[in-house]
Amino acid sequence: MEILNKLKNLDAYPKANEDFYNRTLSGGLITIVSSIAILLLLISEIRLYLYSDTETKLTVDTSRGERLLVSFDVTFPSLACSLLSLDAMDISGERHYDILHDIVKKRLDQSGKVIDSRQGDIGAPQIERPLQKHGGRLDHNETYCGSCYGAEGSDDHCCNTCEEVREAYRKKGWVITNMDLIDQCKREGFFQKIQEEQGEGCNIHGFVDVKKVAGNIHLSPGKSFHHSSFAFLDLFALQGEYNISHKINKLSFGKEFPGVINPLDGAHWIQERSSGMYQYFIKVVPTIYTDLRGRKIYSNQFSVTEHFREGTFYPRPPPGVIFIYDFSPIKVNFTEENTSLLHFLTSICAVLGGVFTVAGIIDAFVFHSHRAIKKKIQLGKHG
Image 1 (cartoon, rainbow, N blue to C red):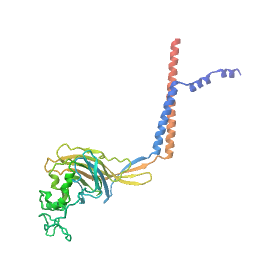
Image 2 (image 1 turned 90 degrees about the vertical axis):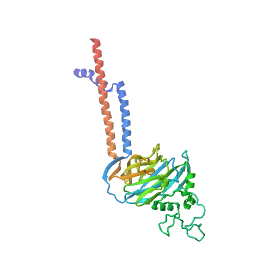
Image 3 (image 1 turned 30 degrees about the horizontal axis):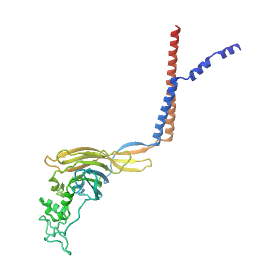
Image 4 (image 1 turned 135 degrees about the vertical axis):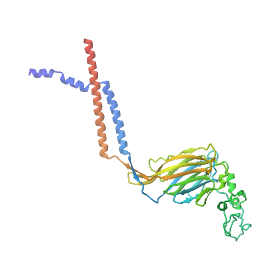
């Protein structure tokens, strides 16, 4: 009995309780820091669980004969809409000149405000009755057949528009010295439009349907013509200096998908030297984006390099902006994936257990270090 009473009087248990339940400043700070860490890690895990992750995979692109839409929105602050034309061509032989379909032009004043907006070309009303090939004005019952002003290819060749007259001259290799004398151009208000829009800018936007092969898209002053398998601009566009300063508001190949970055969106260039051709060399990478529901978006990404060809060198390049694109043989597949519930719960347990374990180790280290130092100080004083 005496032995038991002596054991009860021992202070081993109180000392153990003191070791485990002693409240210290360092322990409080470690608890606060651990709570903040747990909160931040929990928020991070919850976000990873709620929001999907994207897996990337590269494959060889074996698709053939597909088409895609090239969407664009380009602003020329110093080039009138009456001069601006759009052409597209590719290595398969498909060529489209002076495209007006699905294209909208906006006339801009010097401050960039919209003056007029119309689909296709911005024209002027016709005046007078057309001049016939025989020299008289079109009668009520006559069929119109305009003169080509000596550039007729045959006896029954008619030129009923200003463009047809200029193309006939181009095929002959001739130059029209005074287009104001051409009845067709005069009636269509060709020079009237240019004079009215002098000093204006132009915003052109829309889309072009092209084949999935290498090609190029031109935005240039003047009308384009096709002769001997070559495309070239009317000499009217080459006789003057044109400011092709521009801003690309948007350029994309195919549909938009989450996370896509179009490197030319917002790009701008200011012409400080003589007129020339500004070239964008674009490498297009086919892309398939698959969301969580299994829906696929067939689109493209691209990279780009730029180059300016000055018009002072021979052969003189026609003025304008040209997008030269080619397709990569590698296809990128993006697939959205969600974290499973089991993985989420495992991560939560790992966060809680890990933080508590690390905090306990740090707290024990700090507490025992502090107590050891305190004992040494006390022994030093007694000594």
